[in-house]
Amino acid sequence: MKRREMREHIFKLLFMGEFNTVEEMPEQSSLYFETLEELSPQEEEYIRGKYEKVLEHVEEIDELLNKVSSGWKVNRMSKVDLNILRLAVYEMKYDEDVPFKVAINEAVELSKKFGGDESSSFVNGILGKIAKEQ
Image (cartoon, rainbow, N blue to C red; front, side):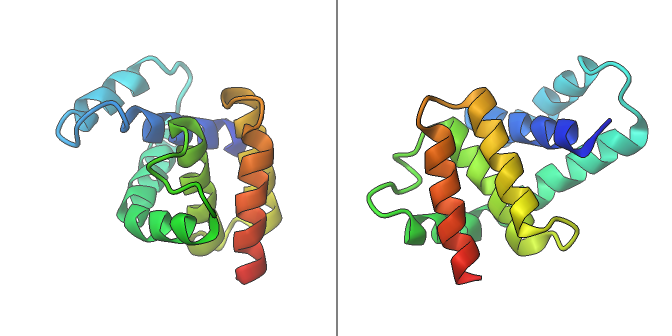
């Protein structure tokens, strides 16, 4: 499985977390992984691991998003855009294996696939501000 596909699964898990309690998510994520065919144990471990790492930093990530997004605090953002941004910001700040440009490009592609008409521009703008600050 390509990293783009794994990133999409991480996004989907983050998005699921918006509609399930913390206590429900282990069962929900297990059910999610059961639906994935041809997923190797290493790929599942990578996806689960990165998902959990994003969650570990979600408060810091949200704080940064609130700081750079004028007029769009995280509680006002669409859940799709918010979780795409969370994943991208995690990759930009905490994942040394992912260059900024790759994190931004992948986030924009996810927003084109899952977000609304303006999502890709919104996501690109927020991540561009963060990249300039780094």
